[in-house]
Structure formats: structure tokens, C-alpha cells
Image (cartoon, rainbow, N blue to C red; front, side, top):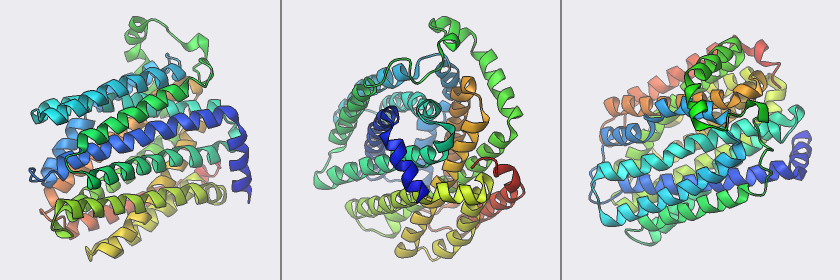
Length: 423
């Protein structure tokens, strides 16, 4: 198979393997840290969780980066990306250790959220930098396969990290601080792994770098304006981002529903609910992995927009069919479907953006991409909070999500021919 052959070629590329190692360690740590936060907020016995509480937590942790994200992109286009991975992960190591201390001290919620906010702030730089750096270590011919392997492997690593966190949390009571400490250790490993790459390898080119922070910040407004103008001129990239943002909204709304179902409808204890959530996350991760295998072939046959239309259309049909009974087994199957379709669409979107956007603007565009992800997820949580009862059973929410998926599919089908150039 050509996909298998291309994967073998990619894994023989030394710098690709090294960048992949940084991604795997960073995102595994993210999975550990995020599950620790989720279990602390949602599954602590002393907390009475509601959809509104989950939405509030997501807003506190994610919305501020709607402001930080664009600034991160401007800086990413001026700072050496290898250094961002090194110092960013070292900083997250220290901040995660601080979060663990706050958990042990049982501090007020606002102080805990402020600490968690600091860790996830740095995440904006690291994730956007990983995507922007990928074209520097692979050729254009294998960029689709690299986009299927690298981000998806990172998502699987985050799922594995989440599984480690679930395991530690189930084995030992009141172990959230220990789980966060494990995440801190993995962040440190990611920082050390970045040292295996030459400092200037990942770009941007030296003539694009402004070494003085003041000079970079002074040009932020101009950089954002030029980045947005560049994206507006690359309409395929803008359309792909719009479609992916809507699919992220759907995924976020269903995530909140599954959280509430695991917490109240399908379980009688916090431990049982946590185990069910861990199972759902694992099955969704299997969908991400499957997307990495089939997306390159599908994009080659259907084009980027054609494949995204298939993903959205499949979700439009299967989400109500599997979700409306609100039974465990059909919804776990739906978790797999959503993992596959969401990650499959993301692989296509990454490829369109990377091939449409000039290298000098990639950091800015991928940071805006990250911002759209955050806003869509928080917006979905807010809508879910308005529509979901305490046990998570809401037929109107499932129907709304299916309608959004169907609208995305119809919109993309009109652009299928345009997307064929991104194969």
C-alpha cells in the first residue's frame, strides 16, 4: 500500500522522527493534565457538577486564549520554533508542579483555575508551533501522510496520557495532584527531546526573526492584519477552517452530553462514571487512529473538501441514529464515529492550510486555527448548558448537532472540485 510505504519513508526521516517525539511527549502530558483537571472539576465527590459548571470551567480555561492566540502566532513567526518547544515545555513543567501543590492545599477554585490557565496558555504556542514546523521536515509530496500521522499520533498520545491519568485516579483516591505531577514529568521529557534538533531547523528563516521581544510585540497589530489578509486571499484555507470550526462545535456539544451521561445517567458512583468516561475517551481515540490510516487514501480519491464532506455527512446520519436512544453501547459506537470523522476532517484541514499559506504566515494562521477551536468548544459547552438536563439526555441537542453536520456536508460538496487540488 502506498500509505504504508510513505509512512515508512517518513519514519526514516531523522528530523521528522525527532519532531514527532516532541509532539508525542507534549500531547501525552496534555492528556494527563487535562484528565486530571476534568476529574478534579467533574468527578470529585464533594462537587455537584452541572452542564453550566462544565461550561464555566471550559470558558475560564479556554476563552482567554481567544485573545492570546493571535499574539502567539505573531511571535511564533519571529521566534525560533525549536526554542518555543524547549522553553515552553520547561515552563509548563514548573507551572504544572504549582497546580499539583494547589490541589493538595485545597485552595479556592479561582486560584486553581488561574494556575491551570497558565499551563494551557503555553499550550497555544506549542501546538501551533508543531503544526507550523511540520513542512520544514517533510516534502510537499508526503505532507498529507505527515498530517495524518503526526497530529493523529499526537491525539492518540493524548488519549494514552488520559488513560494513564484515569488509571492512576481509579487506583488511588485523591490522587489528582499525583496525576498532575506525572504530567509535569512528561513536559520535562518533551523539553529535553527538543534539544535533539538543531536550533534553526524548524524556522522561521533567520531574516524573518525579530530577536527583540519589544520589536515583535510592537509589530503585533500589523502582523495580525497581514496574517488575516493573507488568509482572506487563500479562500480554500479559510473555507476549510470554517468547516472545521463548526465540526469542533458539534464535537464539543456532544462531549459535554457524554460527560453528564457518564456522571449521572449511566453510573451510581464517581468511580463508575469515571471508568465509563475513560472507556469513551479510549474508543474515540481508536477513531482518531483509524482516521490516520484511511484519510490519506480518501483525500487522494475525493480531494480534501470531498473527504471532509463525507466525514460531516456520515456524522449527520449516524449521530441521531446512535445518540437518540441515550444507551451506552450505541453512544460508545458514536464516540468512535466522531473520533474518526473529526480527526479525518482535521487532517484534510491541516493539509489545505499548510499548502495554501506561505511559511512566513503559518504561525499566525495556525494560532488563529487554535483560537477558532477554543471558541467553538466553549460555545458548544454554553449551548449544551442551556439545552441539557442534569442527566445529559437531550434529544433537541442531538438533532441540532446532526443538522449542523448536514449543513457542513452540503457546503463542502459545493467546493469539492476546488479541494481536489489538495491531495
